[in-house]
Image 1 (cartoon, helix red, strand yellow):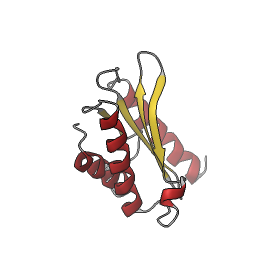
Image 2 (image 1 turned 180 degrees about the horizontal axis):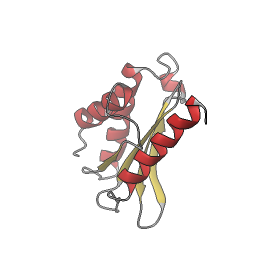
Image 3 (image 1 turned 90 degrees about the vertical axis):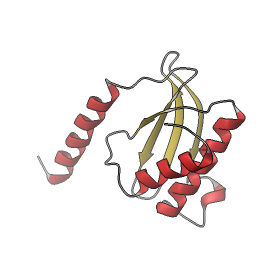
Length: 119
């Protein structure tokens, strides 16, 4: 098993450990965040009906100047929070998706909090 396979396996293990404890509902959906090498993605998910309520990502045209850096992650968190507040969602359950709470993930969470979401 190569180094990259070990990293993927460790993240998958962390992800499953987190996911068995948290669950999103209509009133308090799960805020799932995913980061790739270039971009960051966020979704609000209702696990009762297995549907995505809303999503935002840095691949959209409004984030073309940022890419997927920490500044873009914070702005994305604020955009997602404003969309959620428009739909009447104020409280969420944060799912870091197996990633360490550091860097872009932390910036995304701080942006969502400053945008008005509670978690």
